[in-house]
Image (cartoon, rainbow, N blue to C red; front, side):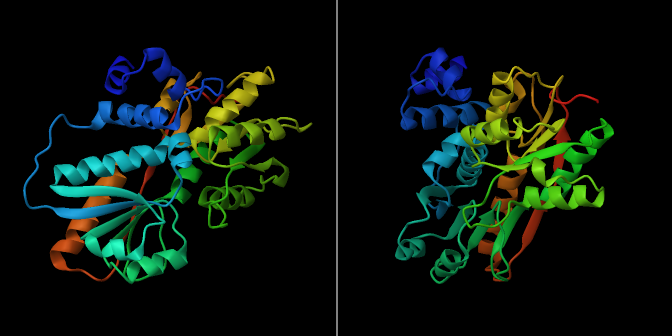
Length: 322
């Protein structure tokens, strides 16, 4: 944390409270953003990268709000890693949100879109630039490249682990995509437990993909007279809020309830206890995006490719046998 504090120009205490999502600590969004970016860069960003006079311009489009990136650092980590790899490979990267004018798209050799972009907006983007890579989202368009997470595998890994530990009463804290579609993790959660005759609709709760969303959903779930013994949480940011709700009720993790997260954001290993979570390799996602971009530019390829990145379960200390 000392390196991060020095890089941003704030105290170590400020870094600690921001990284731990201390809701009682008042600090500007700009300082938060700098701290989260520095946390990623301290671990991964190279000290130097080569610049040349000839480079290709790549646009990174964030199909989510600044607030989402601050509260779900999975996306921040993904963006910072993609930026780093682009620069290392002599691309010039610019970042904008998805409300940019369509004419701007013609100024770039390629476009990398992070997050879930509305289909109508995607088609309008394609009218101006065909070199589009979708990251953590896919569509049926035959001309678009996409890099997606194997959510089916990740959910299966998490739930099979809980079943091995003897859990039968398993709940989920899920979220809704900005498109209104069901979260893929919830979809596969339902399918997996239905096949085992263990799905309980009373154990399905929703919040937005933030610590606060996880906190509010967990408070509701834990007020049930017949509580689940384990909770699968759709992302680690929500799990942070889930932890808070559990502790406020005087319960213990994992003694009273087991928790499994998803994404493996940087802070998950520092939670108390360290969070068992499904790891999504941000590095692999970013490297695959870069590979597809370079291949498309080199060969002038028009046919789209879809690459699915596997997951792995990281067993830490937030689950217990029942």
